[in-house]
Length: 287
Image 1 (spheres, one colour):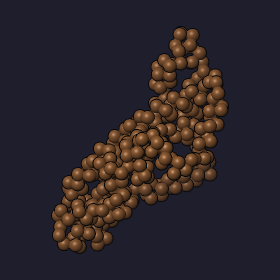
Image 2 (cartoon, rainbow, N blue to C red):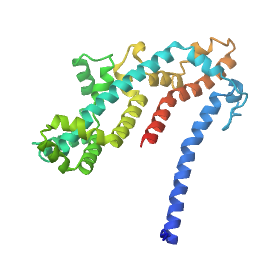
Image 3 (tube, rainbow, N blue to C red):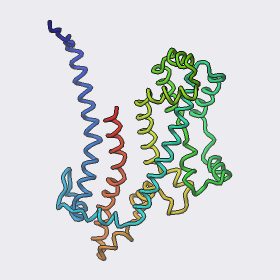
Image 4 (cartoon, rainbow, N blue to C red):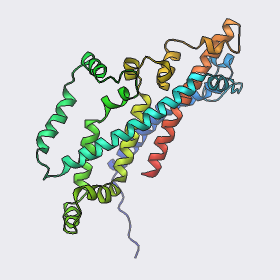
């Protein structure tokens, strides 16, 4: 006998239509600007400068990408951002997962007090100047550690992971492992982590995107241009317009140079966004 699935009421159907409609509008708000940026990056400098480009390239050209990749600082920034993102994400996951699992255990002595101290840091901060003085006293200014250690753990992410462990890892599993002689260290690596794939994927995406897009800490703590992440280079080009030396490689005319600088900005935005788009798509596929 075939069972019929119950149909929703009219109000349920209208609610679903409204939700899908809102999501579709939000999707367009996010995607259309990205398509416009990509189209401009693949168009000729004159077409982009004159505002002829919409969602499709006009006078298709890869000249802007060729010039961007000929800029050595872009490659250096890309490498720096990859190192900072990889190092920072590994540190974040290590601290977040271990802290979250420890605090999720009811038999952890002092867990309530420690949880209160973690939450306190979400509400109050020492401020910008004390943080800078701390980095100076730790002698990590102008190093990658200054971009990684201050954001070693996100309390919000730790609370999310703690809730996941409390609702997903049954107490009976831990008791059974203890009866077999498994200590807490082995239980965490042999049972907890293999069962925590979804939350690990989510935390990886959150932390990686945050590290990749971060520029303020680098602006404060990094002075050596060789250590600049890609976002600082992108900021200098978009805000400070420091692209004249690059655009002049191909053009002597002022108007042509300005047009090339404009389209090169679009190319840099696309190049800086690709890794996070790929990472987000890969995480969604895994989940």
